[in-house]
Image (cartoon, rainbow, N blue to C red):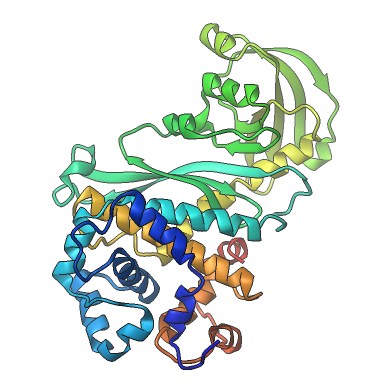
Length: 388
């Protein structure tokens, strides 16, 4: 690459610009726009994410300080606090949602053959939701409880890479199980849920779609045991049963047999019960697949720690959703760059390197490959292993 271009400009070259313009045209994003384009807005928010800016004033001060370099960074209009605030408030947030989803589509192809610890030919997803807290007095539209506001990030994570296959932002007061209605279940794929998503009517829809689910069961489940398969108790397994639901409503909502697998985790001193509609995999594999579900929780923890989705640059619903979708787009962009450049560093390391080298004029591959970091205060060893 051209060594005369900044690392930031080279990073933005990995974006599919034609697809971005399609998203803008789809929602007429540049209606009556004179100078500050939607792409300028995206670049401003991406710069803020990568350099950990905390406010609009912070973004404006940093970009104005490097004014002569803005053109070479890809900006075609001037950046001011008021212009960016207005763009965040009025330009349709769905532009950045659709663009992030396009990046996700491209990234999933790159990570399609990654290993996640379980040998399985089918695609495996983990679904969960996490609440992003907001101050109710500042964000009155995001009412959650009497004194608390927030929005909920519903995410379907493809376990073959740290890439979300589906993301939906909903009101925090909306029950997370209703997000299952938005999923299009893939035939043959596995979906892993925590027990908060135990809804037999919705699970039966997944079963009818010929997909498989694994979900943690509840203690008060009423059922009739039909068969029991032998298990190796030295592995921690306690039972492997075929059951029929006995509750009046649950038996109507899920009228077919289910598989019930019990496991004791001696290290954590916990007992787990899993329900699944798959009768072919070994009981130990069912348990391993459920353990892999924790990757989606680590994903939430990671993006909350390393992306700017706690301090927001605007107070309107449109501004908040624009910032969240831009943050997701930047996260996926870094994942794409990692794969295309064949980097061994984790996403955390790459983000830290980019934060101090965006304005350097050096080939991005050299900047990310030659730069070495020594971390004295790692967040979590497992967290970094997840986001390799």
